[in-house]
Image (cartoon, rainbow, N blue to C red; front, side, top):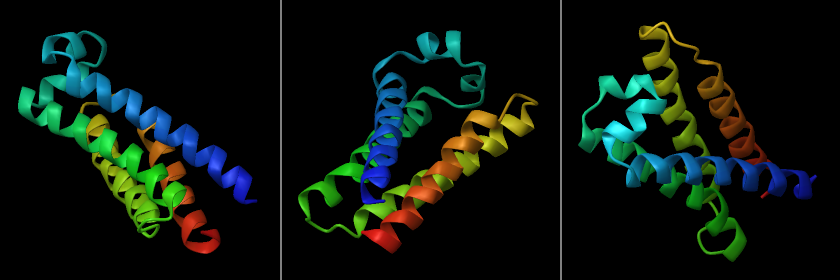
Length: 119
């Protein structure tokens, strides 16, 4: 079971690091071309969202992999779930599809619970 948890954790971390890197490194206009919700945030907020997603993705893997403060892995997972809850609210407000954010949030919760129980 721990192997499955590591696989899901790694894939989730990869998704958050990739999405967060794009938001943190690209210009607001470049991100806006692919993500219309960016209209709702300013450039600084977009960069902060990206940085938090990257840090959350790293936090999913690094503490458990190194054994240094491994309790941070479920904390990162639950923090990413909260981030996705805000994303769902934003998408619902804009009448856009919220399913990807909901799925990422639910998987984050599952990963967090998995690390609490198995980690």
